[in-house]
Amino acid sequence: MQNYKIDINVDLGEGIGNESQLMPYISSCNIACGGHAGNVETMRSVVRLAKKYGVKIGAHPSFPDKENFGRIAMELPSVVLYKSIKKQIRDLLNVLKVEHARLHHIKPHGALYNLAAVDEKTAKIIIEAIKSIAIPVKLYVPYTSVIADVAIQNNISVMYEAFADRNYNNDLTLVSRDKSNALISDDVALFSHVYRIISTKKVKPINGAEIAIKADTFCIHGDNAEAVNLVKTLRTNLEAKGISIV
Image (tube, rainbow, N blue to C red; front, side, top):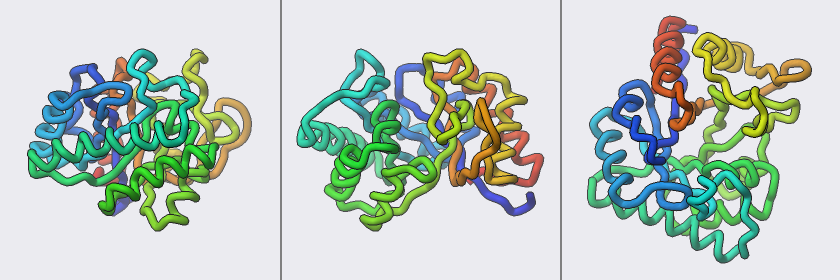
């Protein structure tokens, strides 16, 4: 697949401490900005690493719930959620201004990401928060998701995201982390999963036939215990197939 280009993104600044090991192998990062993890110091540290390695910078806002790492949906009044998302993005923007860096994209985290994929109300809150910052940014979203539709309707550029280290259900939702087969931690299986999506534009769910999917960017979770090896091996194997990481 000569001349094919793909983005690899990782969620960073979440307290794992592997940012310096991951940065050389990725092309964009999603920085926790205080909702589920992160503070000014961690944001600044990751931004500086991203600048060093030429990695595109994204905001990774979530439900304001550090106790549950943003992985449980919260029932919040719309205005409260809106203000929280806006503040998280603004906090990262303030760091970027000091560090003379640019915000490339926004990617919601965890339960907020999953809920916005299927719930129009949540999707609209996120879109309104993005519109309020009045900066042209891309939004990382699942293919055929509600938030993708809402973003496009509001003239926000989207990049379709697939998960390199997660298994899928028949409806293109991710297998719940409660299940033993939710994560892909074997580098051979992960490459097969990613290369199938790139080469056939289909994904093999845990049950059933392959399903159409589109991916402009692939995510490997920074808190995956095998994250460094998975990212490094994936990049090596993709480049061996003539696929550029950009």
